[in-house]
Length: 331
Image (cartoon, rainbow, N blue to C red; front, top):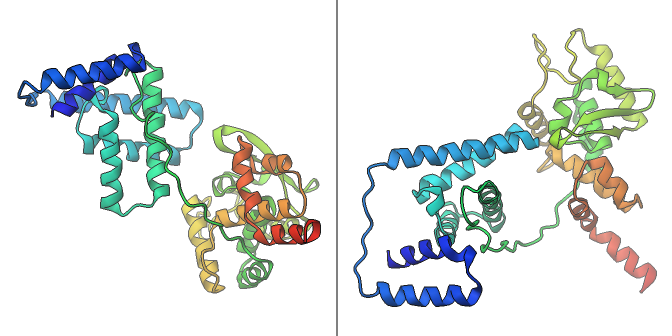
């Protein structure tokens, strides 16, 4: 309890002190408080504190909506931050760096979570507390001193040409074939795919306009084979839904993210190909484009990445190209 009190005092006053003054303050607090027994006061306003915490969380989520975050991202933010607030059990302004370090350590042990998962939680908490600091709800972001968790870089697989042909052959209807061809050719996100309308597709130009993250529009392109399959699929439909991809049964609703992800997994299972999901088509398209010499800036534009560092992750996937280049230029 004594350490907690010292940390609370330091967090309140630290913005006004330099490093030497902060160290001196800590030494004085330790020396003085060692002479006293300290116990925590039982508060009768815990419900009010919880409500205040939730109000701040709701304000943060509203700000994220205004910034253009998807509802899926909003739900992830809400769940992650709510779990932390419930577990720590303190008013937001009283939460310290040590409280959050302990929470992350306990989270890792309880859930057997990977380093990547823990770092994702850390990033969400950092975004939350940074916003609170910027909005003057707290004096200092307690996550600032929790460093990024180093994670092992895993070489992620892409869909081989052979497996993609097998996947094509496993499609028993024109809708599924058109869907995987469009995913493979454009590299669009599954969330962008479900929002596509027929009117968004310009068949003569072999391009379509998609609404990406942050409600930003961009043009993506598809090949001749995709065009043929899309036209055949649209000719086979007898509904008036404006959506590009719809369910087979009445009332022919627009396919959602969960429906497409489930169908892609089923296709992979039927073709006996492991770990097939919509994002794998995106990764494959980007990797193939870079492997064939497309400039990284153009790949970034196609994928709709804000930061080129995100696109650069795809440039490190195919190790065989490094081997070929080494033999060409060095070996």
